[in-house]
Length: 151
Image (tube, rainbow, N blue to C red; front, side, top):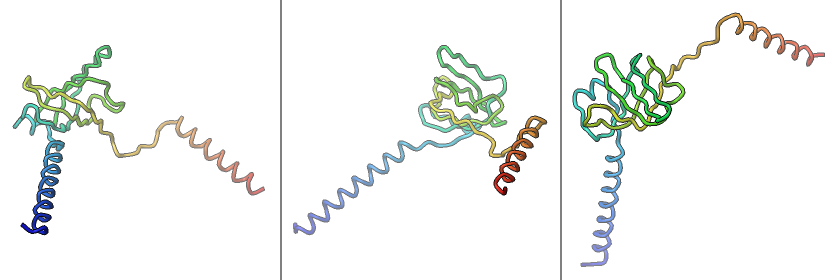
């Protein structure tokens, strides 16, 4: 075997090993996003999922002493019970959207390792007389500063 053939064979083996490592790393770290109805249709225990839905009002149970959190996520068609160990994010509440990452258990619930609370992307200005008074005061201050600068 010539030196060039050995070099090409060695390079091919290195490329094949590198391609295998990349493929196996990507396939193991992949997490699929599903809705509660999709998860209920084909649950695979132990498989990693991202489950998205609305937190069902009245389903939230929080035990601060043990940091156990349980609630139900729904997409309007199906509901999935979720259990989480740890503190929830600030925006997490009943009637709001949430995405949880974790696995489906053989016991029939979703074991969450991460909660992502969804929030509205719309900005709403504060309403009421107090907000208007603050706005008027801010405008007055800015006008006074502009007048002082012109003098």
